[in-house]
Image 1 (tube, rainbow, N blue to C red):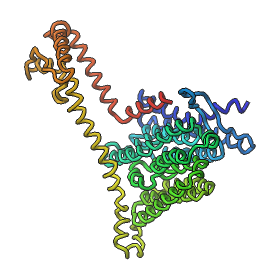
Image 2: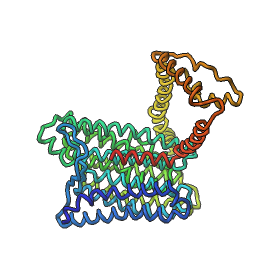
Image 3: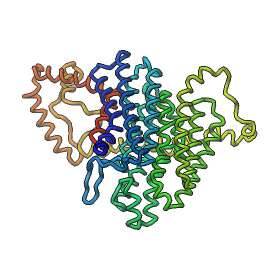
Image 4: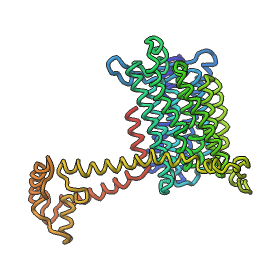
Length: 523
């Protein structure tokens, strides 16, 4: 009887917070939970969802302690391509049960803390909507039975992080830092996608429980195993802000304190460590990558320790301390001490979440300036300057990642204007006036509507010119008579309402709703 409930329990654990986010979004869209009067319902929905997820995990923990661990649970087939099948599956082994229980427990604490912390904030509902999305994402990352669904959670966590870093969207600093974090993490996501592709090509499976068996049975070459692990390693380094991707995480503290706690102090910062723990069977086959992981962890810990010595802001100091500890976790993994890394992760996540949540009260209690940098560091001006400048990693990241991305976007726009528009016969974006706009302008005496619609350009320009002239003839004689008529009034009426809808869709909360709906359709 209990085993027949396993698929439903597994599916509900990450789905409940996702449903809570959908409920909050719909309630805000239709207006029943807006303002201060809607805070109670919003809080209860978010708290209830994560509480039920934690309760279900505790049930599975009890079964595991009694010797009846669920193991892998296949709910159904999600995608079949030839001989490759991707299941909608969940995995509940020792690692998953520890991580999922930790995620649900800390998420519950942070959600409860946020109820009072965000009280009477204008973005109260928006915050809990995104927080519930993040809770669902982290639970999906740690409970997914395949790398594909882990990637879905990975991306949803990234979107949630972007939205809460830019919580104060009217501030340029917040939106710029959100963009910086988003762009940097896309590099790690590219590595994750490559690892998925390599796994499907060489292993024929992306199920976490099947990958080690397939590698042993097929005698996969070490080079191919290394490339698979390398993709996942790149994703882990970016998500856990290890060198050379460390610069984005301190800027990500723009969001409210609860989001800083759960994202960068306790949970998401450890997602890369979890991914490396999940890759234990393959990592042990490629010692060179374990040595690389060891070196990266050591360098990140050294960098974060030195930079943290000169910080005066409490949240930034805690963030550098977190980077130091996460770097040490990668060191343990590089040395093959996987159990120690897991223990370190659990203890650090609980301790650091308490410190981050307490940081606002610390700021109120402190009556004196922060302590200066250690004397030994001040005696070395070059090292002190490098630590103050965070070893120029922020500037290097902007130069290598952010600026090229902006330049690429600009070049894409120029290509669209100079090549695509000319190919299809559109002269310029600035000269694109619709017939309705021209008719309205002519009524106001701004200019006279000529009988010609313009000369065609490019390969399809002459064809479009002929079609445009035919459509103009139809409009002038049949559709839009000189006195306007009922059709013109109807068009104006619809136009005004469409402008209102367009204005609403441009708001962050409705953009978030569209993103959430897209993710739900994909899943």
